[in-house]
Amino acid sequence: MHGSFDHTIHKGQGHYGWDNSFPPVLTVAPGATVEFQCRDASAGQFSRETTAAEVPKIDLARVNPVTGPISVDGAAPGDALKVTVLSFKPSGWGWTANIPGFGLLADQFPDPAIHHWTYDTGGKAPAMFGPGGRVPLRPMAGTIGVAPAAPGHHSIVPPRRVGGNMDVRDIAEGAVLYLPVEVAGALFSVGDMHAAQGDGEVCGTAIETAMDIALKVELTKGAGLAFPRYTTPGPVSRHFDAKGYEVTTGIGPDLMQGAKDAVKGMVDLLSRRHGMKPVEAYMLCSVCADLRISSIVDMPNWVVSLYFPRIVLD
Amino acid sequence: MHGSFDHTIHKGQGHYGWDNSFPPVLTVAPGATVEFQCRDASAGQFSRETTAAEVPKIDLARVNPVTGPISVDGAAPGDALKVTVLSFKPSGWGWTANIPGFGLLADQFPDPAIHHWTYDTGGKAPAMFGPGGRVPLRPMAGTIGVAPAAPGHHSIVPPRRVGGNMDVRDIAEGAVLYLPVEVAGALFSVGDMHAAQGDGEVCGTAIETAMDIALKVELTKGAGLAFPRYTTPGPVSRHFDAKGYEVTTGIGPDLMQGAKDAVKGMVDLLSRRHGMKPVEAYMLCSVCADLRISSIVDMPNWVVSLYFPRIVLD
Image (cartoon, rainbow over all chains, first blue to last red; front, side, top):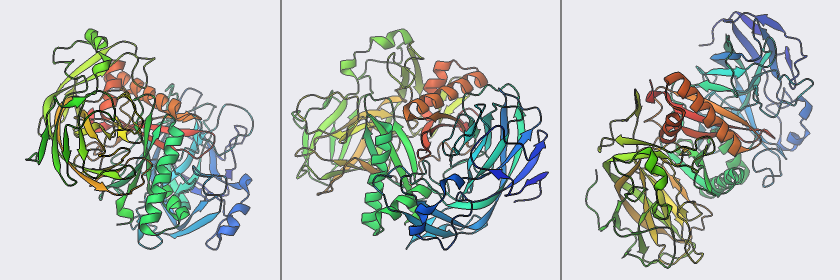
């Protein structure tokens, strides 16, 4: 239920990249509830009519816009900003793209691709993917963070200890996120909304969508966090897990290569079994399959697994 | 329900390490059901009376015994051995140890430790850990694989593309595992039973226990698998997820360091909040917390998360 909140930050009130010299668009007291209207990760460069051929033309200086920043009264370096995810207001349209040069298997998928999604704004009905695929939805915020202490402008792409483009699937309704504050006021921003995503976001994009998010911001003084932490109010995979999983693995001395091997194995399996193009299988994995580290202590080899929920294609 | 099966392999019929010159203890036809009686990962070196001081005395040449090998009629290189997990017969006693030099945070936990568990052989009641902790059980096989083609003796410790010490939490009841066959007859063995384990098995041991396992072995000719794959018959985390999770993260350019940071964050959180020793928190994470790759595409930094189920300590 997306209700009314103390403040609303409009989608024009945003920025590209992180810079602690960006002035806050609003200053709030701890405990405030704030609605952030968020644009999609292309900042409107993609529409329902965008074709695969147009994907590489995206202006990378204008990706992942975030809404904000807001300053929080009393926030100081060493504190944690406690952010509770209250609710989402989805727009009903989204896209998933393979952007050349981006994504876990970028070398194997050099050609652009895009899939358009129309989804239920109530977030209840799965979104359709090609013949037979049905992806359960779970709205989440891909980019959520505070300004880094390091001066100057920083790319929006990498996540950092202050958060940012973490793409954590479970920053969803009811989650409570604790972010290490590095500058006075924290300077919090949020964007990069996803209607659904799997752990890893393996092709580099999820169901990218414009969506409003409502948050409550509070302070935990002197938390001394090394990295962000969060809690989930309940189960995180029940929208996916009812029929179990198909799982592929990668085994070897490098976790990154293991992850690539696991994803490649699933792309091969899905494209062969379900007659989809490999790039379609790859994009489908990005929105619903989970990368897990199954074992990491049996030297010198580790096991990385990709869990694809059978409910999507059953 | 652990019933009767075509064959039983007794716990004396086993080996240490992998070697395709080990003669099979039995040859079966595809479709056979086989019960394997399995010793614990210490091969009986640890008992209910073992103290922390005795842990480093373990003879590493006699760890992770596996029961087998069995030869499967007609199995040839390039096939997959299809192994269906039918049921388990747990023994009711297990151990978790911090073995110096072994485990994800070996440098931070140089001192030996051991925790003894008495658990419900029906696998239904959670096992107790210290004051208040209750770990839901889910029996699984840590080491399950076929002989590698490479001649000679190979350590049991690392998993390989033929499986082995994969420590995959979801090789549990109802799972179907496909293993790449590299030698005639496959030469399948299994052992290293766990009453409970989290993804990653971060301290290096789970609830290590003697336990029998019943399997059905079949062949998929010419499968051409690069790595093992498996399916789960249903949800994999419902024994853990009802009350949600506490999650810590590690963010940076190296997945291994990210995993270490996430585990360190959780050890700090649990030991501070629940008054347990850090090494107890570390061992507890190993038996119930899951390592996940939350994002792996936002160059150059990735997010690794450790999910600790709140139900264990609530």
